[in-house]
Structure formats: C-alpha cells, structure tokens
Image 1 (cartoon, rainbow, N blue to C red):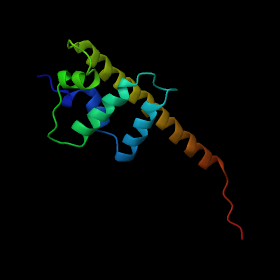
Image 2 (image 1 turned 90 degrees about the vertical axis):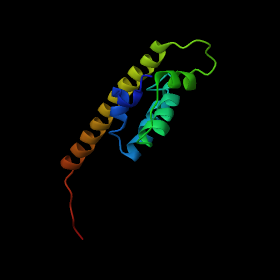
Image 3 (image 1 turned 180 degrees about the horizontal axis):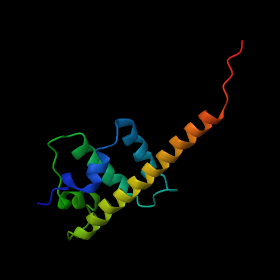
Length: 117
C-alpha cells in the first residue's frame, strides 16, 4: 500500500495554518484559479484524513476510490495527476499570498501617517 502521508502535496499542506487551509480551500474552489473540481474533493480528503489526524494513512487506491467512486478499474496515474495538481495549486496560492503581503507592506511603508489632533 502506497501511503500518501509522505507525499510532497501532504508535506506542503501540513505547512499551512488552520486559517491558511481555509483560504487555500477557497482558492481551490475558485473557477478563476482552478478548473479541476476533483482537487477540492482531494483537498477535503487529505484535510480530514491526513492533516488533522496524526496517525492517518491514506493510500493512492483509497484516494482513487473516494475521488472516482464510479470507476471500475484503478488508475494510479489519475491520483498522481491530482497530487501534482495539488502541489501546483499550492505553489500558485503561496505566490499570490506572498505578493499580497508584499503589496500590503509596500502600501504601509509608502503612506505617511500623521497623528494630529
């Protein structure tokens, strides 16, 4: 059984704080950034089974069965694509978060603050 608990996608997701996890899920739900709805389901599964359960183990077959319940035959490449897509979306999300933070601090440092009464 190939455990996904040590995959790059899970390792990256574990770096997110609770609030960031919620933001990342909203990011995945946005059709502007993500057209693959299965990534949201994959995130939800990872979140419930791996991120919030230290002893949680999840195999590629279990992910496949959850994401593709109607499928008759297991296709490992689809799970690989999902985890790769999750990593790609995480990197995009992280880049946007960093840019927003930099822009916020740039605005703060450029705005003179006057404290007159």
